[in-house]
Length: 267
Ligand SMILES: [Zn+2]
Image (cartoon, rainbow, N blue to C red):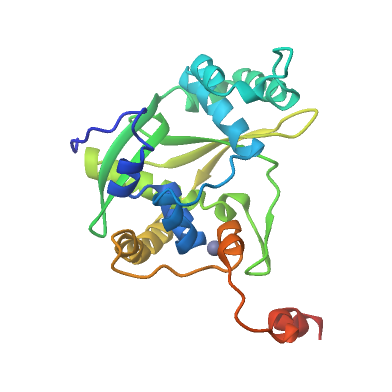
């Protein structure tokens, strides 16, 4: 094992976010370099959405730290002290998962296993939801399992790919390999938030997909690292909340320019 002093308490501390790249941070840079950097410097905070918080709630349950989570998030309760409806539904999602034997077997590994390593010379950290000697499992709460429309690429994509879970799997698999010498398969244990009944599935992401995702990480991590170190200027995506917040208009634009891609498609 490669040595480190990361714990579940300091894993996301500003110091460790600067010291290490993680798969979420990598995906943030992929979406918008300027926003990711501003967040790292504490100049911008993404809104904690209910969707994110429900995911953390379910994570905390499986980690065995739900009591602490509840104490730290008083906003998930109503004024009269009951859990808000969406978190009662999260409890229901958990109960649904707990009565499936296969799902629970995948979730029965060592929880929140932390490891560090290096990809393309860049220090990386990972925290695995459920670590087994023979496989790696990450827990996800998603809206549903339907493909998601990618506005930028104008295609529908599997939700696994859309949310970059292949990138996460590639990073996990590579860092685990550096620590244990083993190249392990990566699974997503997924629960939907659908009402009235959530849906469950354990997805396997094929090794080929992880290979190409790792290539993407190897190709871009050094650039993101240089941006983190202030050696390269970050690019703005122009569209995310941070870019909208900080945009300064310089001149009028011909509206056709923005809709060019649609014009072509409508012909
Ligand atoms: Zn942006």
